[in-house]
Structure formats: C-alpha cells, structure tokens
Image (cartoon, rainbow, N blue to C red; front, side):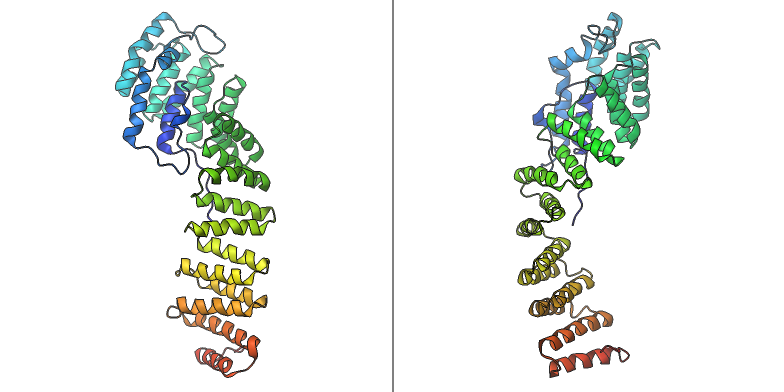
Length: 394
C-alpha cells in the first residue's frame, strides 16, 4: 500500500506564507493551498506578494506601534522609524538594494526591529545563514521578541534542525505567540523526533486555527497511526475523504486504519472504492484478495487476485502464484484453478523454466485434488520431469 509521506504545504505557497509570517501578517484563509488542489502559478503568486506592500494594515504593523508595549515588541527611535520608511518601498521593488541600504543605516546598538527586518530581507533572498544570524541578534537584544523566535523556528525546520526548531517555537508560544503555521511546523519537528504525542498536540492547535488545512489533519492522522489510535485516524480521514473523494491515498490510509481496528470488511469497501476510481494497485488488490480469503469469500478473493495480475503484468511472478496456492490450501480449488489459468494466460510465454515448473506443480496438485491420477495430471507431471529429470517430487 502506498505510504503517505507527511508534507509541508506546497513549497511555492509556503515561501509566500513564510514571507508573510516574517513580517507578522495574518494569512487569509482564501490563500491556502490544500492537498489535491492545483498549485498556483508563479505569476499568480507574485501579485499578492507585491500588493501586500500597499496594504495599510501591513504598513501600520510594519513601522508603527513598536514603542507602545515594550513587553511585546522592541522600541524604535524616530530615526529608526525613518529608516524603515525609507527601505519599505525598496523592499517591494529591489530586495538586494534594500539590504544594502539598511546595512549602511544600521548601528551595532540599533533596535532589534532593524536586525529582524534585515533578517526578513535576507530570508526572502534565500540567504538563510545571514538571516539566522540577524534573528539571533534580535532575540539577544530583546529576548521577548516572539516574531523573531518564530522566524528562527522556520529556518531551523527548513534546515532539519528539529531540536532547535522546537526550542524556538516553544519560546515563542511561551511569550504568548502562536499561529497555525508555527504550531504545524512545531508538530512536524516533534514528529521527526518520533515524539508523536507532542506532535499530535501541536498539529491539533494548528488545525484549530486553520481547520481547512489538509496538512495539519494529515499530520494528526500520521501521529494517530504511530500511536495505534486507529479510531481517531478513521474519523480524521472521513473528513478528508468527504472533501477529496478522488484522493485514493486517503481511501487507502483509512483502509489501513480499519485493518488496525480488526474491521477487514470495511477495509475491503475502501479498497473496492479505490478500484472503482481506477487507481487500484497490485498491492491494494492483493490485500483485498487476502481480506476476502480471511473472510471465506473465495469467489471475491479469486476475482481480486485476477485483477491484481491484470493491473501489472510485469510484477514478480511469485506473488500471484502464492495467491493461487493460498486458495488451494484453503480448499477453494475452483478459485485456485481460475487464478492459475489467469497466470498462464498472462505469463505463459515469459516464464522461465523454474517458474514454469512451479506453475505446473500447482496445476498438478489441483488436478490430483479434483480427481486423482487422470491423464491430464500424468501429462502435467511428465512435462515437469521433462523440464527437470531430477525433480523428485514430480
């Protein structure tokens, strides 16, 4: 069964989301890209990125009010406000120039806001080492600077430094911050360290703030699987299947959860749904056949095994043969014969001598079980001996 890999939102969308987070702007729900939706084109993405600079709320949050509550944001002097006003239009038009101008204007003892802003400009240019250094300077000057802690966490996640990311995001939350992306990436960092309880808690906070975000729900689902909380996984996936009925990964994951709950026939319903969507795989159909065998539904099992052969005629020969042998061992001789016949039809001209002998032996055992030593059985055994005179069993 195809494994679902946990994913951070689409990389192109995430770059904009992180950009907005850097400067403390709330991301509108309408801009989210959920799993299964087509990713926006680069031209579609660039326009919001440019328009945000003309947004009055952004301008107010970017340069105003820093001295109102020193427990939340660092103070800025009137001179520093003038610097920020000067570089704001440059940041909309020419990031490298904005970086050069800001560096010339900054002093070592400047407000942490300027270090933070420089870090954001460098982040946008993918200068992560420099950005990280400036965010560290910002929190060193102002330890309660939660936006700087958040951006440190974003970079640490990107660099795979999960312990550092957890420390940064946790510090931000302790300071009274917290947004959906920060909680979601905190969950990702905990999951990477296999701390699934903490990861689940973080993902749930992210989902509370962004209930429509598919990534957070999938994150919780993965954590539920790791903790064998299959009922939770089924419920979470029910919502996703309702939203995206064409996404076969969700059907397959829920089938796996049903198997964990010892409800194989419900799992079979999901696997049949995947087949109706035209997305069945060799693995999913063999699993479906095995479920039917365990439930003594041999006709359905033989049908699933035959479909598994048809979906990939280049698959290893051994697995379909094992399916036929399983049916024979359970006394389903007619169904085993159907699968064996289908194997011969699919692979007769491609089988090597060793595989051909295996298939002939199965057919001989089926013939003997169906009626004993008739001429057909003898001819099959003679063919095996002809292929391998030293085959003692034949």
